[in-house]
Length: 306
Image (cartoon, rainbow, N blue to C red):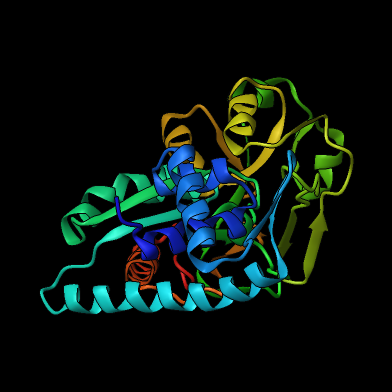
């Protein structure tokens, strides 16, 4: 069978980006043997070695790095060309791999996916939901939704919303706990802390009202690295939690949790969509980004100015 040079180039580029034949094959939906064969055929055709292979990591040779830069541009141009032709028939197609925080995925994006499927029937989404800040280029991710202040200079970002938080606890916990008349009273309570996976960085909440401000920086009674786990712990009566409002709206309505200090303001977390700065933003990725930006703008729990 003749070598499909474009698909071989695509396989090679993905290997460089994720540093693994297995991960590249998985992201492309191919067998590892197929991807390996494509690269071997490409190397034979070019007459050069493109990759250094070891048991731990795959990396480009000097010639491979130079070839990658040009090949990546060619693939992006072809994808954009195909997308522009498809758009002339009101059709955008392809697979978009996206990562997002669990609350964004579970409580905003996934419930709205039927609408996305109607608007873009030929786009296939590969969605990851976690609190881990994945490496986009290293893991072959097209784009990601990120919370907080972004400091990675290798990413292009666009702020599209904000995650609102509130303090809450279960009625059973509050029935036996010390009274809460002022945020300063929180220091007498058990509170449930959140650490970001990978970095171990704590999220430290601050409440403000007029000229008053209070930051809860004492050591938590318990730590968790997943928002749903913190919610479950709060419902179980283990202590006071600061949680995304969108995540606990149902528990608040059902009475499983009670909001505390609702007349104080708790700082929100900005939500951005990010892309690798070295990657051309394709029509399919742009379609998803614009869709989720409109989705957040239409929801009072997520929009920027609510």
